[in-house]
Image (cartoon, rainbow, N blue to C red; front, side, top):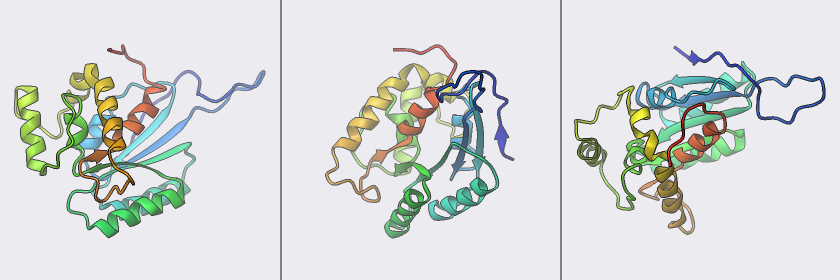
Length: 205
């Protein structure tokens, strides 16, 4: 079921005298049904309305369904979160091209969303299998990594700024960029940065 948050406060748009602007509305449509939605549910954003949906669909279908959902609501930003994983390169590229044409933001990972987690601990520019990401996270966390761990957002939060820097650095090594082939790479940090414009928690250096 879609998860909605009740907003309070004001949005980010410029104010006009004696005029109350509507709060920003985000739609985040995730490929994973639990892992990504559980992570993004950790953000505390009382000044924005967020709807988080896990559909369990491939990237191209995800973009199509996000487009359909946007047509039935009013959103300031629509994001799709998905992995390269075993998706054929051409279909992955089609999904990114379609997202750009539809003005939908893509927070993709090649190969897996767990790359974003691992970047909280160290810079990683070597391609790995999904299992290797899970094993690496288990070592860093000191316990077996669980995909749907609701405590993971808070646990990783003190390292979030480091992960953002690592993700940005990783993207700069690909010239020209080819997301379907750039393994490893991720743009999840771009969605994280956008949400952080409204987030309400103690920041860590």
